[in-house]
Length: 218
Image 1 (cartoon, rainbow, N blue to C red):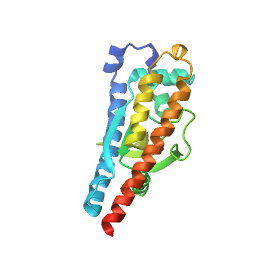
Image 2: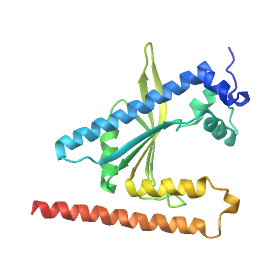
Image 3: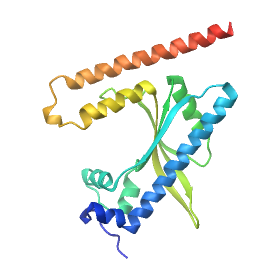
Image 4: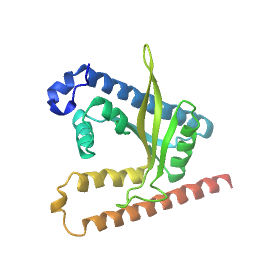
């Protein structure tokens, strides 16, 4: 049977489409599985070192409308198969850590897991994005074990500090959601400068934490 095209469906139709419901469930399962992996790592780290490197974990699955918009923007077929093949962040997990070093420690622990394949590693902390955005991105492939088969699902993991998450959340609200044609002059430069200031505070907090721990040892 030919795959139905998402593009011609309304929001209510999509919500009832068995193929889309199955797709959403698959990616929700992948997101839950990934979030649990990080919860286990955080718990073990707390047992071993009496502190938790992860502040909180968030997960989400793109809506049908977001999937359609992203495929259309790329001039790709707006179908379920096309979405699986061409969108790596239908499922995404955001891991928010306390300090910059924690970001890399958590990533290293996660990368040791044999059932997860790292497809792409992007370090926007060492090399910030053009707008000042900072985060560690991992495009991964993870198996989801269903009742009668195993499905391999692509997902995106963002690992960042509380400070990085603060900037990214507000930047998204201030600029991404706004009408770009009506943004006041100089806003882009101000956002970039704010990102640099917040990054400096991030490094300062890391340094203070390190000095406090060293003084406790002494």
